[in-house]
Image (tube, rainbow, N blue to C red; front, top):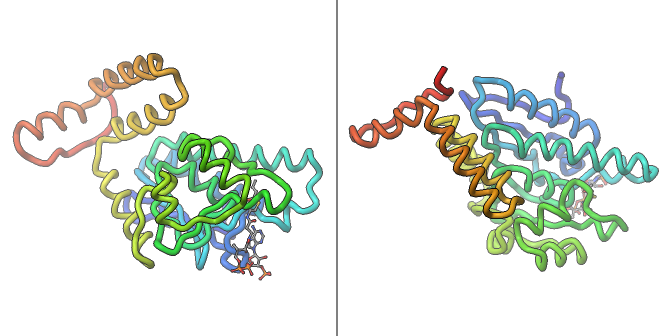
Length: 262
Ligand SMILES: C/C=C/C(=O)SCCNC(=O)CCNC(=O)[C@H](O)C(C)(C)COP(=O)(O)OP(=O)(O)OC[C@H]1O[C@@H](n2cnc3c(N)ncnc32)[C@H](O)[C@@H]1OP(=O)(O)O
């Protein structure tokens, strides 16, 4: 697919995806969502890509779903749009590689929902977060009412979804929505640095760690622990386990190759 409203770049093992509609504060039109879905298909399947960063061009990460596209939706079209958002979110959440949101500026509505599907959110000091859908007479539809309480608890989720209030990056970090805050202009480089750090880890264990946190989170603890034991033992079928432990004992840096034993 040729991209018109996102930019897809690779830097070695890293994919950098930029939502690129700065005049509309990178609002998520159906086209942006189709292009992002295609990009994350590529990131998931391309063996040369080991991690991804998603960001926005200009003064926003993403200021929400495109209100001009949604304005005339019928209820049925609105359902289809929500499902499109869910599909994109699941693609990112289930991506076998790490994905970091590098948030500059506004991160609202569908933008906040998109960021929450990433493994973690890095934000610049001036970033603003919120679920302002209530001001439009709707509710969040790309997962916000469900992922937000899982991340920040029910009270904050209700406050954000029921008032439409925006909060700054520091407050978003204090409630657990944002993982780290950086001085203005530094967030993208910081996200790339962390993504590259993860590119140097064993891909089997990296994928397993992501899968366990994602899948275990919504399971009863005993089932989640059973899942952890299963995935933990799978790591011992990878040459990376032997390499990682040998490297530690031989006091050298591990050289992970990825893959499972044949
Ligand atoms: C399932 C998901 C649902 C949703 O996500 S619903 C949408 C939730 N998001 C919002 O409600 C945020 C809407 N945007 C705003 O409230 C404001 O923008 C900001 C506070 C983010 C920024 O305000 P300011 O600095 O004054 O900029 P500006 O002139 O309002 O925006 C610049 C251009 O960007 C367009 N734009 C901003 N957000 C959206 C959007 N979400 N959908 C469509 N267009 C958007 C505007 O209209 C305008 O465009 P022009 O220059 O042509 O007038």
